[in-house]
Length: 554
Image (cartoon, rainbow, N blue to C red; front, side):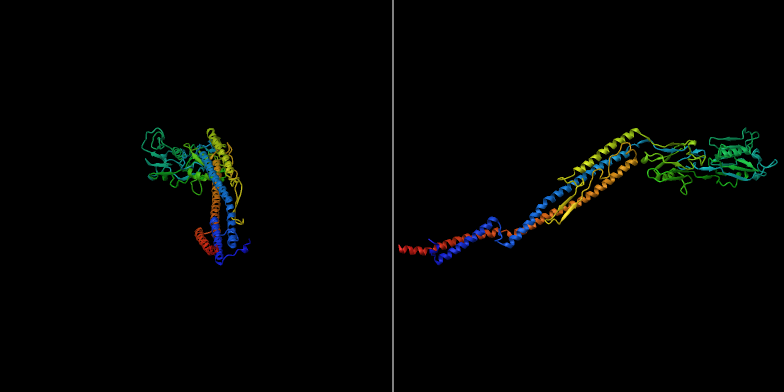
């Protein structure tokens, strides 16, 4: 029977429609509760549906990038770990080099030139005054005429000292003294029984027995005593001249062995015509030594003198000038001055040495081989020390090998920023936000390091310091690169956190557009269920009247 033949009363139809609407709303509410969304398709809300779909898609794209960003963080951390290890290896290499510096110098004898014994005033020179060095020329001082008492003619060397003077003020008196270079010459007139003209005590002081009746001291004895005390000996030697008498005047010679100073008592110097003696009787033209450059040093010229005007007087003065050419000087108790290479440059040969003290320009130059100077042109190795240093070279080379392998191993997922690889990271879904990190090659060669050669490296402090210098440079390079990688890591981690937060923002936005309020929907479901029950009851009541009519017909 066709539905069109079924006739429903108005009340029934109204209740039926209400019940159908309630069922439809209940179905919608139950669907929302089942999916948790209020927009499940474009039919529900086209605007919200497609907007949420776009937000979800972008969040998904960015989420996919997080994996590569995370890998990038690990690559940078692997590089940072590698740099930390490389720094420790470089520090270990430094400790080996410092151990070499603390090892005994690798040469038992360094290249050097050592002078003959240098003397001044007959004694070996000391570190405080090296002025025995230098070309010393004899200086002759001629006094004023000395009056002669009894006897014809002027004063001669053969005359006795008692004949000097023609009045009480010009004659030598008992106890008169001359002091020459700190030594005293005493005129004795009271001892008439002396059997010799002169005598000398243990301190080097001389007495002239002027009053002796058998061996009276003569002018020649005085001149001999003066020469002896002045260091003008032996008379007649190269550069020395014996003091004499000329035209009744005493002619004193300084000689070449020492300075000449003179003082007196009771005016005896004036009695001898020596009142004008001013103690400036030595002419010194300072000897020189020149050295060619050694080990990157500066060519040096040393001029010995009184310490003024750039001249060298003391050992400290000398070392100050030699330091610029990597040389050092020392002196022994015999007055032998030795100039050698410093410990830092112990492996170097002696530079070319010249100057008036070394060549024939000064006949008395102390650094002439003909006068006893010696030269060690090439240093002599110390076998035990060199063996120790060669062992350190072997240890150093093992560290260098580890530096290269560590740089190669500091990689993640096949990317090694310390082995020349580069890294590019993409931060957004369009590919427009990126970071490119250029790798470095930090094997031994890339850090400027290399294997040392036994017998060439670590053999002295200079070669060791060169190795230390390259290690210090490598340390600085590693620190700078660690800082660069650290900055890159900070950027990547910041972008990683940003992307995570952005994904959360996008997903929250999408949820706000599509998610249902479960509390509201549950309340709706309860209300609709109640409405549905009421509608069913109403429909049942609407059919009751028809059932009553049916009963009447029966």
